[in-house]
Image (tube, rainbow, N blue to C red; front, side, top):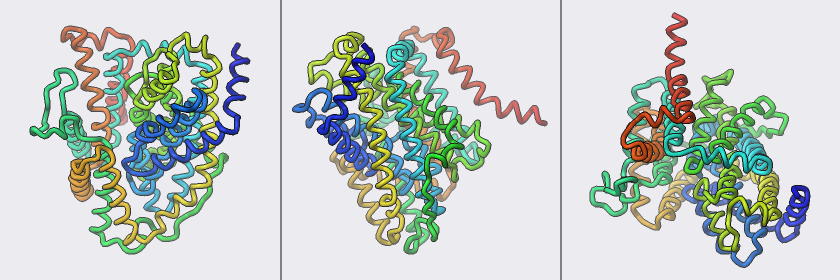
Length: 492
């Protein structure tokens, strides 16, 4: 049966119409992912209506191309202009933009592309061979397990706080404060909204990123009175990285992809926490941890392979259990329902050919993404050759337009500008932005899962210690947090 379904999938995917759709889908995803404010979720949502008149196979193939390329393309703006195109590319900016400033943007873009493709392919293989088994693993994650996992992710803050731990924790606490703005997820009561309807939905993550990363850097460059081409050092290196050049990072890519797959199958998590955890693990095991946050190609490889490892993995609980792993998976779920298909175990029995078509399309989407990415790489890299006097205003306008399109409201532009000023102040006073970003992304997840757990246990904190998975992650948290202190004391 598996062989028959696989042949059906190959015949469907390699139809001329579907090949064209996957090329169009990856191009759209790459465009949306690379532009600040235009997220992959927005891209998939806008493309969804065009799938209504297509067959289920063709519609899913188009969406797959958009999803895979959009997830990768977030690294392009993260590397070139210090603005993550997607939240999961935030960790990529930590090393990508410093490399751009040192004239090594082409190298950074190249490693991001290769790592993204490998992560996506490994994720697609996991979808084909391990979907039912990994779906059962996802069922074991309740609120207490999700809390322990996300709390474990917060421990990364200690290692990305730079030279001053106190400044790192102040930055993280500010991020947690931002994450708490909006309607209380359990009680439904507004918090820190100041009777402003816009803040009821919380402060938008993308607007904050545009301000903290891009607009703050623009202000910083203006403050330095950047000369033409001042965004990078002169003599930009145009090193073309090939598959053989990333052999030293293969183990990091494989390890990070597996982290992405495991986290991707857990509903309600996503690429952001996967990229942070993979980045932290890569730094912990690296032979050159001092380069992380400055110019580490290994850090980019870890971040990008992890967030692309999530892509196919998020569809595992969606297809097998009908539980979407993230917002994009929810759109895929909607596409299946529109075409009269009900996700669940019976879908593999009744529509096995379609299921394998989805799986094979993920493999082909990553291959097409690599081809298009290699072709577009040199054009993306030329962005930084534009004189700063021209480029800075253009980037600022793009950022403000991107912020506006998120909610079609001037409030989003105001938020982006406010956080641009905050980010500029953080640069000047040497407060790290990485803890702030981690706290904003993971803060709401930690709070919601913790409070759900306490409701289930009637307020008893023992629920976190009596569940094996949550206990395991809490032990890991304690180990990761305390081990550097213990090692320093042991050396003394």
